[in-house]
Length: 82
Image (cartoon, rainbow, N blue to C red; front, side, top):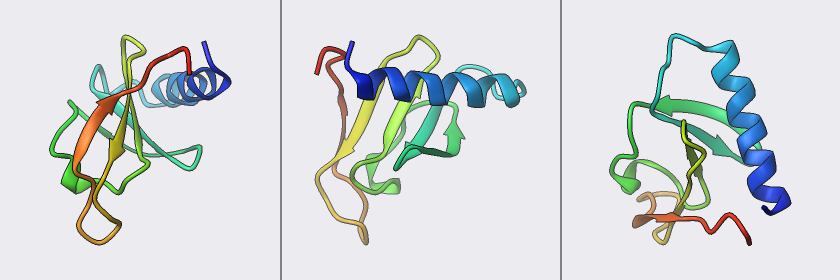
């Protein structure tokens, strides 16, 4: 597992422990900091490119394409070994 994925998992796990009212869903991380939570991965255009979403099972997705003004184009699963 890469250092990036490990760091994202750690960040999401700490946030989930402190915010137990938010079960399941995805923790949204931008530049190493949690900025939100959603009950599921939704339309990527609501997020800026480069945002990570970590679900409760540890799967990681990144918002790619698009731009900061109009949002990302798609969520892409991140290979845990990169």
